Amino acid sequence: MTTTEHYTKIAMWLHWSMAIIIIGLVIMGFTFDLMPREMKPTAYMLHKSFGLTVLVLTLVRIWWRLTHRPPALPESLKPLERAAARAVHYGFYALMLALPITGWVMSSAYGKYPTIYFGLFEIPHIPFPDDAKKAISYNTNQAHEILGTIIAPALIGLHVIGALKHQFVDKIAFIQRMCPRCKS
Ligand code: HEM
Ligand code: HEM
Image (cartoon, rainbow, N blue to C red; front, side, top):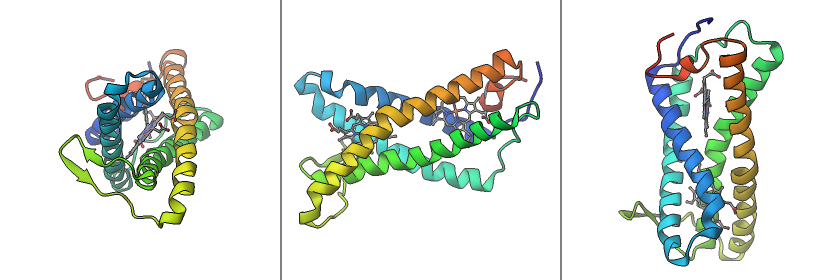
């Protein structure tokens, strides 16, 4: 198997902790409608708290990415595969900002329920003029739904298929690039 370079340990921990949280939030989003009524307040509190945690981690991750050069993609990747990998990575960064921001704007404009971070303290709502709240809440709700139920699963699917293809079909030690405990 061909070996490649690695991301930094911090990039790896950010990648996997955020991947787990984001995949969890997407699954949770799909199950809101199926939940018994009495579970919903806690589920929304956890969704919003983990979602805002993603926003903070994304800012840290962008700073880390800008100050630490990522390893070059393996030489054997075809030009189209490189372009696709980069597009998915940039798409993820945009998504990791857009999902929490649309969520926060939607909740703020809807305004009926406070956002209590893991039940500990209140996160202030973004102030919007009263006459614009309905439209803002509707539009960001639509955007949040499309990003969370279509774009996120599509990007995750492409990303995972690409990683598995490079690992098992091309026989490059690809997952090792992002694996804190693997030797390559
Ligand atoms: C990476 C972060 C996030 C992901 C992946 C995510 C994902 C999702 C998904 C898939 C849904 C279901 C959409 C639907 O079927 O209508 C959803 C709904 C929702 N999200 Fe998020 N979300 C994130 C962050 C946030 C944040 C930060 C907030 C608020 C502070 C938030 C508030 C909500 C609310 C209130 C709903 C329910 C909307 C409704 O019932 O119409 N989300 N989210
Ligand atoms: C919501 C889930 C995920 C997100 C948002 C995500 C995001 C990213 C991003 C943005 C990168 C580029 C490195 C960086 O700039 O930080 C990356 C690299 C990588 N990811 Fe993920 N990822 C997710 C899930 C997964 C899963 C489930 C796998 C398992 C196969 C995986 C495997 C990899 C590998 C092997 C790399 C390094 C290879 C490369 O440079 O392309 N990721 N990921």
